[in-house]
Length: 100
Ligand SMILES: [Zn+2]
Image (cartoon, rainbow, N blue to C red; front, top):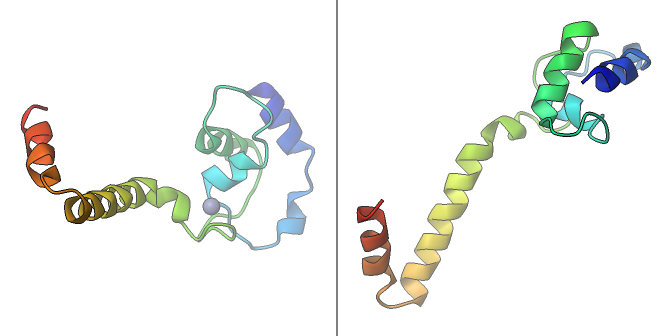
C-alpha cells in the first residue's frame, strides 16, 4: 500500500476543488498500484494521508456503496425472467433454496 500512498501524495488534490470522492472512486484512480487491495481499501488509505473532499461522490453519486443492492436486483430480475421462460424453474429454484 506504500506505493499507493506515495503516488497519492504527489497529486495536487486542490484541483479537485470541493468535489467529493468516495473511497472506491478515490482508490480506483490508483488501481494499477497496490495489487491485492480493493479500490475502497486504497481510497481509505489515501484519505488517511491526504485531504480529499468527502460528501456525495462526484464520479459515482454513491453507486459504489450500493453494489449489494444492485446485485440483489439483478438476481431478482433473472429469477423472474427464468420463471416466465422456463416451466418448472420455480420448483427447481425453491428446491435449491431449501437445500442451502
Ligand atoms: Zn464514487
